[in-house]
Image (spheres, rainbow, N blue to C red):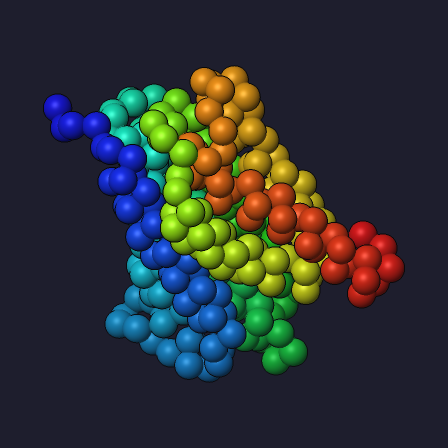
Length: 248
């Protein structure tokens, strides 16, 4: 049996994992703005560049980071039920991205060309905005709940010092920027997404209250990042909509 991780080991690994997660998210987001013509080029005999990037680069990388974060906040302990739920959440995230991204790119590439019949377009919109979208969010919410519970069951022994607070705060700011920029420009389409993000935040909040053993947020580095990112993204998006559209 491996030794339990120390506070310093947990914080060091989380800092690297969060930074890696943010970097992958930024690159994946930037790839969505790359020229569609280049992304629709063939990549081998089966897939194209867009699908290859989404399904075989970004998604596996994000899912691996999710898994490692779970093991880190759990201080290296093996919790079979949590591991099984994390596998299920990773499947939801990966499956959702695998459905959503190719369908979204097809709609963007062929809209206005006459290549999409109404029936095909309805099917692609369903795969993009309904099935893929909500399968992804289900995995996202479950992963947040599992990570929040694992963190609440294994808080740090001591409160984080200022260097760790500043470092994780910078990571939280990067996550917040990624989430906000994916939410505020698609009003009113993303209103339901704000509700899902609040639902996801309830998991760590409930775990903190029920199983946190009286530990403050400075002994829970995952919650230190999740709270401002999730709650902040909802608040900033709502304020942005009020300023830009006069309503939410």
